[in-house]
Length: 336
Image (cartoon, rainbow, N blue to C red; front, side, top):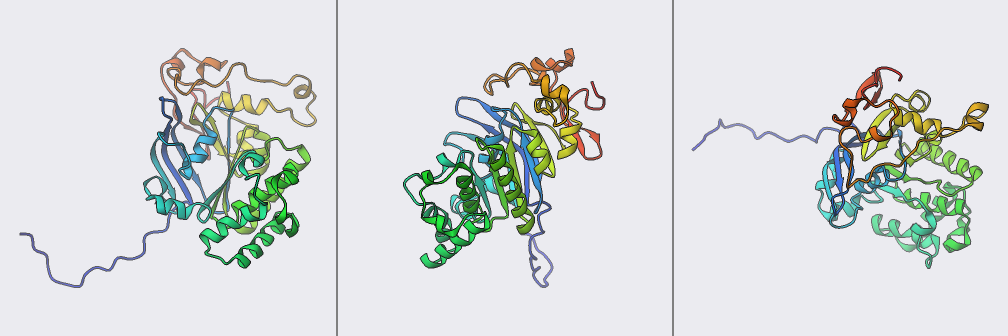
């Protein structure tokens, strides 16, 4: 029998504060059938910080977004940790997961027309999370809905409209209002300006930036457009074949990418005033690999113009190229 000295029982203090609002560690997502959509992603977001995630379709951006709130389909294998305020979302009971959705973290899906319910008025859809999570009365939910619509630049009277009665930009504003309904600390915006014209896109991006600044929420902005992310975000992570291949300050990654894929994405968008890029835009031949049949070594090497023989054998890890900039490339310390 073990014994211990008598004395006052220790009093447990409050748990230590989380270092980051969101701390993703070694996230792995494999769909049924063996498609490895996300492979060992590490990512942090602080309160009031805007983090962009870029990459072509099929690189794992939306899968990453869905994994953060456990919105992936049944049969998907997920590993690693998703720490929201220090609490692992992947280890939560389902009741706790439902409680943090909307209230702790929310998501703005791409394609508002498909994300909104076509047969319900938009005001009722915004009010639903308020009624559920805030236990508000119907009158309180209506009042909150009007406040949210005005906050995103729409008249409160538009609450009575159906989705098809609104323009694309107005529907996107409704989605943002819904995401903010319960004052979440983290908002994930998955291609929030897809299919919008450039003027409306600029309005939506200014709106998102203003709301983040005013409310101090953390923002993850997902897009294929590096120029948009460079103008909107503080930091930028570039994904390819389910991995982050470059990350650093957003403007620095856009203007001085150190990974060949990051440079190709940046060069695909012509610079204003640069006649050379306007008349001879550069692209990248080929497509991202099938997640269920990834190439050996660095997954980008079949499309890479500067690949070495070793790139087909050895995968690359993120290495520091500047004090706050990393890239997963054998050339990361130079400029091939």
